[in-house]
Length: 475
Image (cartoon, rainbow, N blue to C red; front, side, top):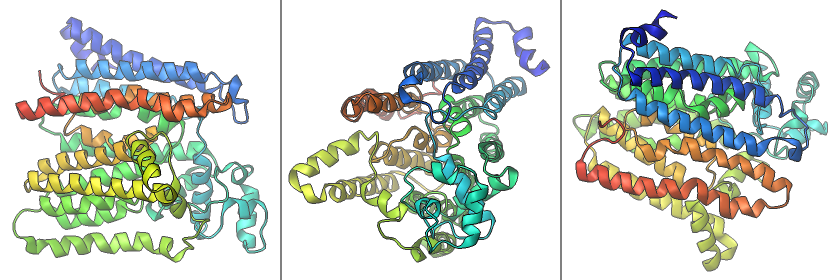
């Protein structure tokens, strides 16, 4: 532990002491999260759960994280400080390995999909409802696997829908199955391996930068990442790793390899395809290089899409349901949707989604016009476009915010980082649903989460444009 104390003992300044104290408090926060999780047993009555206390606790973790970043930006990127941050973040993750997932159950589908994929079967063929009901169309091998799973199949949410997760995600789920079948701890070990890879890539990409310590702390210490991935088990790190690998390859001048990796990223979530024009813009030299990059992207992306296209894209498809009607915790999209209802009530969802696509195309065109070839313009444009995607999405789940974290290490913005402290309010919906006040969340709590962020983002963008400089790492 010498590296934890090195700078503190040699230079016991108030800032150093405060920084070490914040790191220790973040570790204590994660330990407390573990003990709090024991009160969220599966099957508990919602009104018996300490949801409001948990929300306040997580907001406090977000505030502590932001205070830690303020202190880290004042510290040099020495090996001692870097080691302290890495050790603190690792301990935060390890505390969640035996924890009870809090208020989330998406991981049951991951566990089931991973088992199916690991056994060489198609996870797109049958819904959990068909399997639980022992439908005649379901093969015996699948039914036997469901029996081995215990209660996993029975606890999958939206059981009438077939899986929504593309092949890259399925491969990660299978990896977790091989670690520990039908157990969230297998997922957590797999996510830890992916997260360490992301950390290593970020450290390498920020090597030589004066803000490397801040960049590492910004990603590695985020409490929302700890809760949503290592406690709740969400699979966002599969996407995060493929996106960071795409950036790392482009930074090394390997644009075609970056195209391949971006194609694989669409096998985690479909939306990374919108990055392709940014990759083309980042390539130096003639546009004649573009066809090779497009082909490098299209081949793996096509392979990722093939099993989805070959499956039935009907009402039982998770992809169809998500594309047509999924809506939760939305802010800007809610305005578009309610406006569309006044004009075209029967097709409001379709109209609102089309409006989001058009806005994203405008943002993309603006960034293509403003940016130049090279890695730094690519990283900035990718952050802007991904932030726009999240802020306009009909589903602004807290774990979706994690797409932004590695991108913010290249262009930190206080307004977007502050979402770490406001997004935990999303969890109040479980309590409000239980007492019959779901509308209070959809039309009230949502605005508490996002209106301050929109205002801060507008101000920060205005100030940054005037000064023509990054924001968080300024003195």
